[in-house]
Length: 118
Figure 1 (cartoon, rainbow, N blue to C red):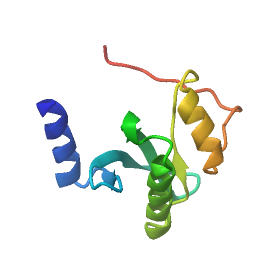
Figure 2: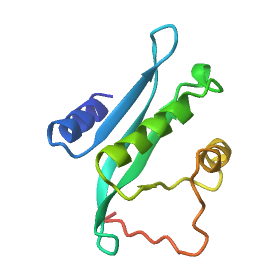
Figure 3: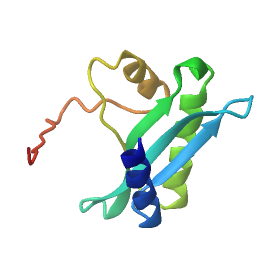
């Protein structure tokens, strides 16, 4: 966990990401979302990559994920960004049910490719 703490700390210090946290009604840290800026040449604007969205299992089904997504949408408006993008596994039933409910549209027209250094 120390390596995760260092990684996140560096992203924040270098203004490379934005992290929103949410507390439960009981005041316990219940979840977070982390967003990274990316840029669209065709739109000539910033996009935000919603890279992480996590709510502790004991706090799920309380609408906290939706609140975190709404905060991410406010970040888009506040930074004059053109939108949010995200990726999730087809097997992520929770996410695949959540994202359309919060206004995301599934892009079925494009292929997603990646290359790893490994």
